[in-house]
Length: 157
Image (tube, rainbow, N blue to C red):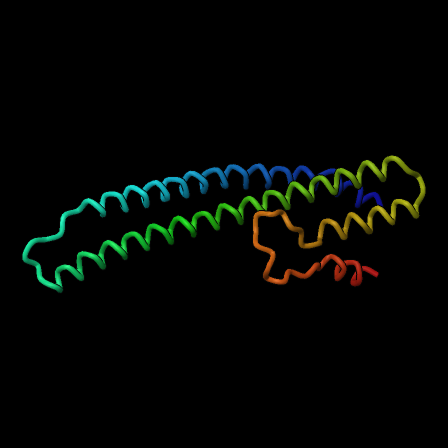
């Protein structure tokens, strides 16, 4: 039990440090996403006012419109991709903050009681909370995510 208490003192610091690093990284991806969104809007406005090439024929017109579509498609996809990375990083930061809070709650409950059964119950629920696949609201949960926290408990027993 002593090792558990020592781990519960150091792990929240590690989770919170990782959360802070992820939050900083998320800010960068948010700025990149915003920059790409602005570039996409500017490129679409500029491409709207580009004059059609004179005497280029059907092949020239096809190339002109295809290059516009490809450029805007690439910019839109890059914006969406960076936005997805931002959401994934924010999700990881929220999960790390949740784990740190769970460990802090564990410390508070263990320090508040001398009853061994209560400590074991708190340990069981904290373990379930830490290892469960949590939802943060940043990612789409329609993929059928299954809670894996019970597997850790089953293997422990």
